[in-house]
Amino acid sequence: MTSIVSTSFTLIPNQKYRRSSRRSNHSCNILGSDSQNLSTLGDFKALPLELFQIILEYLSVKDISMLSMVSKTISHRLINYISTSSGSRRLLQQDFHNLELSGRKQGSYMLEHYRSLGLLFKRCTLLLPTKERLKYIHKILSEVSCFKFSGCGIPMQCLGLPCYGMFLQTLTAGWDELECHRVYNFLCELTNLPRKMHTVVCSKPGSARKLELRIRLFCRSVLLDHWTQQSDSAFWLTRILKPWPMVNQARLLYIIFGPISSQDGQVVWQKMTEGPTDETSLKGLADAIKLLYDNDTKEWTADDVISLVDELSVVPREWLLENNARLLILSGNNICFTFMASKAVNGRANELARMIVFLALVCEKDLYCMDWAVKMMQKVCKVFSTQVERNNFLQNVENAFARVIMDMLQSVMSGRVTKECPELQITAARKKKNPIFCSPSLKRQKAPTSKQRRKMSRGQNIEAFHFPQMI
Image (cartoon, rainbow, N blue to C red; front, side):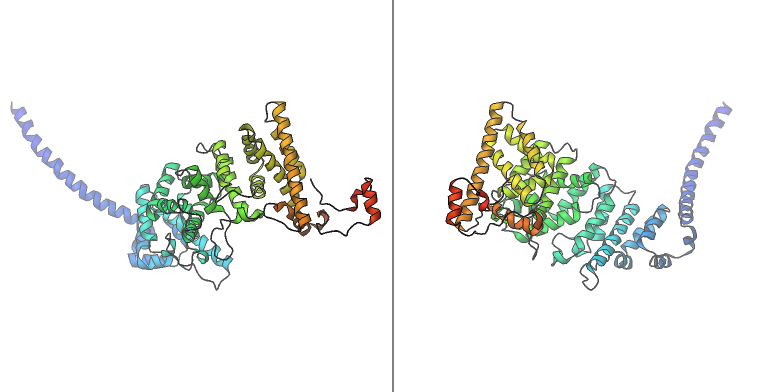
């Protein structure tokens, strides 16, 4: 009994002792954690914070980025330094319009600076959740007006958006798709991008030229242009296009990658409908189409891409067939064949025949190998399941060539070149590119003599008239 009482009495002080022990241990942990934080500063622990920040002024952004990986304590000090007025002024360089230096040197320096800054922010915010990282980074970068969607008054002469894009590309490199989805959604909320896109795709082409230009610059400079891996570019382009119906996707694709004016950078909507265009005007569109087709993404099937090309060819109105054919050639063999095979399967043999003719004309005009057009036609012929369909297609090709030849001769005889017959410019284009390959001149020849007429009536010396060489 005595032992029981003794035991019961001894339990109370033990409990009290443990509670007091927890308090003392807690205070010891605080002291230990402070001393540990100081120890992770290394030799910097002897310096006051102000002196530490002065030392940072002498380090490059790359060196500060390396320093941030030393310890969590130093990383926190660097975050505090970035938030100070001196740190922000030093790190957030805003010399985006300096025209005194060479544009290339200035541009490459600024892009490299913001690449290093993106790496610094990536390392300093490594332990934060994605949402918190984005909020903190936005809080810091919101001081730079040229990083905003409409923040700069001269966007065509500004390096702000390209630097912002380089920063984001470095920051998000290696992130998984879910985190990148959050980044895109964050940017959409920040800039109200979907609403702005809705305005341009639902209004008449060219009615909001400045907004079209802003959307083009933001999407290209911030989201698309800085990626080295095509899969990354395809991911961000998919984020831009996929929320919209196919017809609006084609409009957006034209706004972002279509031809622009050399004077003000605004989108030229009539370029594909008023006359033949060059490869430069179509290269951006062709590269974007190849990007979506070649990358094995579940979000884009071959049918999706072909439907997008079909919709694109009527933006803002139906293109000239020469421009459509040139886009298919620039898009590559697979897309070109799949596009034409789709027409063959869907019973559009007449359209397909005209496209074959203009593919041959573009090959002649742009000095491509004519064997390519012949082999492409042979490959398309195999798509038809019966000999009757194949013969019907070949007859359509023959008729299409005949119509083009008659249009050309009629235009030559009348002394005019119309928009409906752009293939008449083949001779001039070939002569300009390579005089060796130029066709005979389309200029009016001297009238034949009576002797020549008699020979021609007997079927002799038909070469006396230098008709244009046809394919």
